[in-house]
Image 1 (cartoon, rainbow, N blue to C red):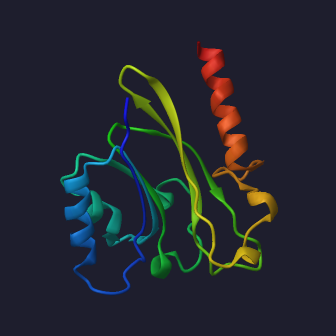
Image 2 (image 1 turned 90 degrees about the horizontal axis):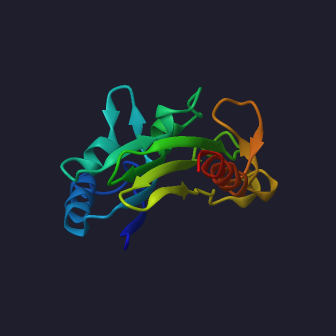
Length: 167
């Protein structure tokens, strides 16, 4: 099976207001299976992710959909999002910010995507800060429920163990 994967920093609402529509048009042309977005704005009155994936057939999840609390400045700088051709299940969202870097609202998302005839695929949309000192060492972070520390590698290992148990 071949997969079309796209990753794109949307740059929130900066620049030309037509940009979101242009990105949507290009996504419809490319017809990707997996998309990792960075800096996507979501607020109670506006969902840039919905605009980006409108009429693409993609299923989207924004970090704001699964975080217990929204990081400061997310309304201005956006957050991470994933869109997939098939419905997906969120495994975790990792908040990689250091306590003194509250101006960096991006998280990394891990989802399981059931690929027809292939099984489950773990897709991790990792987002890092432009300011490396703003992240936890070794990209360790907090899970969405705040209960334990995790990393993308740890998420992958937990996913693999679940697959083995269910086999």
